[in-house]
Amino acid sequence: MLQGMYGKLEEPSAVTLAVLSPGRPTPVPHSDVTGWEACAAQVAAFETLLAGSYATLHYEFPYPKRLQGHWLPRQRRDFSIRCSYTAWGDPALPLLLCVGGVANTARRFDYLAHRLCDRFHVVALDWVGRGLSGWMPVQGDYNLATYCEQVKALMRHLGRRKMLLLGSSLGGSVGLALAARYPGLIERLVLNDIGPYIPAARRTRRAQALVRHYVFNTPEALIRRVGAAQKQDGPLSVAERLHNAWHQTRWSDADGGRVYRHDPRAMQAYADGAGNALDQWAEWQLVRAPVLVLHGMLSDALQPATLARMSKRPDLWVAHIPHTGHTPALSDPNQINLIGNFLDGRPPDGPCSIPITPAPRRQAIF
Image 1: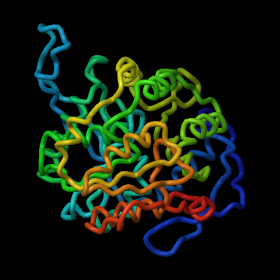
Image 2: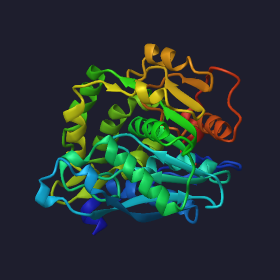
Image 3: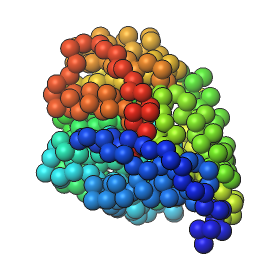
C-alpha cells in the first residue's frame, strides 16, 4: 500500500542530523526528501524519538446555543465537537497551553514542548476544523468567540483554573480576549508576533493565500510551497519544514497528493472578515498578566506603531527576532529558552534581540 501511495522508496543518504534535546545532541540518520515513502520513514523516525514523551488526547467541546445565533432557530441544539490536543510532561507541573495560527496544528509546537516539558505540563491544541479536531457544522461557527469557548472547555476538561498561554497569531488574539475577559485565568502571556492590531490590507493578503486549495503531488512541491508559505518563520532546516508540513497536511486519494489538514470553510471564514482590521485595543487595556512579545523583525503583521503603543505598559517585554517575519516557528533553542525563562518568572532585563541558532546545528527535530 505504501509503495503505491508514496512511490518508490529512495535509498537514504549519508547525511546525519543533530537531535536537539535538553541533554547532549545525538546523531540521527536522515533520508533526503526524494520520495513520499522516504518522507514517511523520516517522520516515523522522528516519532520513534518522541515515543513516551507525549500523548495525543481528545475531549468534547460543547458548542453552546448562545453562539448559534447565526443558525436557523429550528436548527439550534446542544451538541459537542471532538477536539484533539497533545500533552507533554507531568500534569502536576504548571500548565502551558500553546495555541497556533489560523492554519496551524498542535504538532507545530513539538520542538518547544519537548524542550520545556520537564518544567511545564505543555498542552498544544488543534483548533476546531484543523489537525485532528472535528469540524464545525457551518462556516459562521469559525470565529473568535468559538475559539475562546474551545479553550474554556479544554480548561474544564483538564480541571485547571489557571494557565500560562503561548499564542501564535490567531492564538495570541484568543489569548488577549481571554486575559481581558477572565482576569486571573492567564498568569503569563506570550504573544508570538501578534498584537492588538493588524491592518486590513495585511489580513486580506493572508486570506488570498489561505482560501486556495493546494494539492502537493510530490515532496518537492510540498517543501517548496511550505517553504514559500513559511519563509517568514525564520531560518529553518529542511527537516524542520518537513515536520511542520507533514503534520499540517494529510494524504488524499481523491487528489492524488497531500492536502492541508483543515476545513476549507475555516479559511473562508477568516477571509470573510479579513476586509476589516483586527482591533483589540480595548481588550488590551484590560490585560493584567505579564506579557512577552516575540517580534519577527520582518513582520508585516506586528508593525512598529503597534509595538510602540503596546510598549507603554510596564509589565511587557519585547524580544526581537532577526531574519524572521510572521510568525517565528519556535524551533530555535534560543527562542525556547527565553520563553521558558519568562514563564518561570525570569523575564529579560529589557528589550532584547534573540540570536538565531544556525540551522545545520539543529537539523532534526530535537
